[in-house]
Amino acid sequence: MEYHEQLHDVLFPLCNFPLATLVFLAILLSLAICPGSNVLENMCLVKVDRCRNTKYSSLPLLLQVCFIGRSNVGKSSLIRALFSLSPEVEVRVSKTPGHTKKMNFFKVGKYFTVVDMPGYGYRAPRDFVEMVEAYLQERRNLKRTFLLADGVLGLQKADHIAVEMLEEFGIPYVMVLTKIDRASRGLLLNNVLKIQEFIKEKTQGCFPQLFLVSSVEFSGVHLLRCFVAHVTGNLPTVEAS
Ligand SMILES: Nc1nc2c(ncn2[C@@H]2O[C@H](COP(=O)(O)OP(=O)(O)OP(=O)(O)O)[C@@H](O)[C@H]2O)c(=O)[nH]1
Ligand SMILES: [Mg+2]
Image 1 (spheres, rainbow, N blue to C red):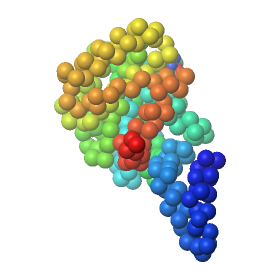
Image 2 (cartoon, rainbow, N blue to C red; image 1 turned 45 degrees about the vertical axis):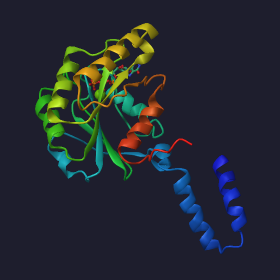
Image 3 (cartoon, rainbow, N blue to C red; image 1 turned 60 degrees about the vertical axis):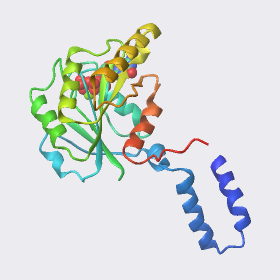
């Protein structure tokens, strides 16, 4: 509504222009006023494939972002929450750790691809290392990796191993604390401060901002959605006025 009013205000003085010119201007304006809105508002997630390590090379060379973390940390749930505007797309979650056994690829229109990884640690698939490490090392169009840790438990031993691997491979990554609805405010703050300190002191490739999310209450989900759009080049940052 607001958008249409803005459009009307801008276009009204131009009403003597031929119709084709107005339509052209309207398209240009819609692109300028709502950068990235196609991605954020539609987030039409089209599932293209669910496959093991070798087949993904057949995917188009779109930019990719992937979600890794311990089994049961909430990777699939977060992806489902990020794309809640496309409820018809099935992202399977389960109470049982080790549920996601294969890498799942979700294509977001023509913009980028999201990769849901199997979890590491308890009940990880046997071929986890060869599958995930090979992917992380080889994938040139992997734009950002999201490393998820549990908001109640904080960083666990297995998470430290994952951090070492990402640092060793020189992969840019971002830490996300999940299930924050389950953590008391005090515990959450404690975990956040510890992780921020860890990021500052011990990491090179980790983005300094930690993201806090709950896929049940949807807290933090929209900001993360914007960040994903941003790192894939679909949300130009707007200068503060
Ligand atoms: N309370 C709460 N529960 C969550 C949240 N996110 C996920 N869960 C629950 O945690 C369990 C595991 O969620 P999944 O999304 O399947 O976890 P995953 O990391 O994909 O697990 P694997 O595929 O086994 O590696 C499910 O029972 C979810 O409902 C959250 O933000 N809050
Ligand atoms: Mg999963």
